[in-house]
Length: 420
Length: 192
Image 1 (cartoon, chains in turn blue, orange):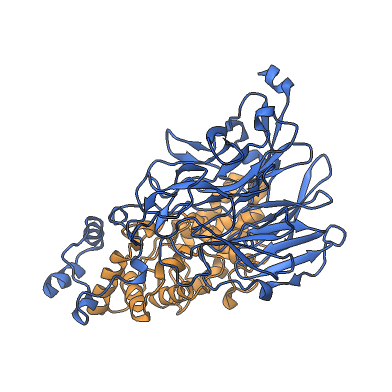
Image 2 (cartoon, chains in turn orange, purple; image 1 turned 135 degrees about the vertical axis):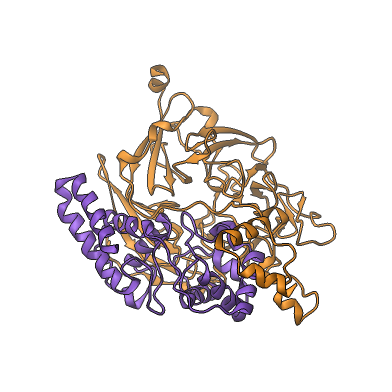
């Protein structure tokens, strides 16, 4: 065996690549000589057989500016009467949006480490960088005149930023007791109807037993970081939520795990009917799919059922219940959900915004397309990735495109129906 | 040869538009500065300095943006990309992406090489970096990268110090020993 390995090592690069491609099943682990039959190391967790030959990998982000003229907005399709336009661009990595009291919009990012402030003079939009060099400052929220920014390892509050653009932030990090692992711990944050700040803490892995209990949770805090409560457990990675307009219950999106096949598990839309509920991770996915590697008896027992499945690997992101008066009546109190789009699937899924109509009790959910055309199923190419939604006072809806660093605006009018 | 490539590259830019003459000169000058450490052809001969030759376009662009923005705090790079435009970053990237990677590795330690080969395969590094480890999109070429830099970089990822870069690499190296990382670095550095 040792001899065989040595000869493999002397092969040309091409032969070596082929060997790796085909899988060199006979090669023994050098470590196995010392310890017989060691348990699989931590880095092997969740790697299914299908992964060994797969080349699926996360889609590349773009960190350079995209001009409006380079955005193929005409490729987007919406129901009759709706119109979509490039409202702002030049903000690489733009994700979640929070609107300040004076109409300025604050936008978080991940890799590029910036928070943008977008201003509208009625004719055109301009943006500036409020803060940079943060570790994935994806969480932005606005409350009582203050901008809250939450990075993986930092929480900052900018008091009165609308009037004082260069205000120094108050560092609230110590109060929030953020856990050390970074993966899936970028944030979506928002203030609830109770005035509290809601914060998710994702699982620090694709699939694993949690290294400590502080992950895979949704929590809420008082605005100053005090009074932390764990509201839900078993939530793998939620990066979007909103409160139902009539029940005031929290509904949230959740990303399903990777590497369990093209069609399972699904991403989900969920409802927090009360606090203390378990949403299944790591043993049970989407309410009824037992995990194939992290097992326990009756894995789905006592696990909450989702409002609806949102498609496998679609990457469900921001969601907003529509409460405005601009869109047709059927949109009232319906949820619009951005699906950024899959990487861990051989046929791409998502890359759209959908409408979810359901009862206030979460029953009878029905999904219909709202914005499509970011991805071309025929050749599997994509150009944009819708990430978050923000309803404007006039009832129009903003959609951020994380791929191109742009914000689109969706409007509706009966004249636009007639024009079509 | 390399200067010829630079010259050809610069000429291409000049011909594309007379107005971009100074832009092309700026890019050529910048690439010469980069080459002082990263090697004239992007294959680094300096310990701790990564090779840039043959790296994927998006990977290089993204790293340069992150260094410019201060997301990746690298003392040797401090100030080097200050004020460099997105367009210039794209042009500099084009040069390095088109320059072939050449392994700068020393002699091979067979035991370490085989161990590294085994772990790299078991850890499925090739799923993202491709089976011949030449990288793609935002995921770097790791074949023929410098051994010292590969080890340094993996240690950074493992300890969550790889600011700005995808945390999926931290998750991928979670629980690996230093000996594992040394073997992987040795193996990959020997590849072409």
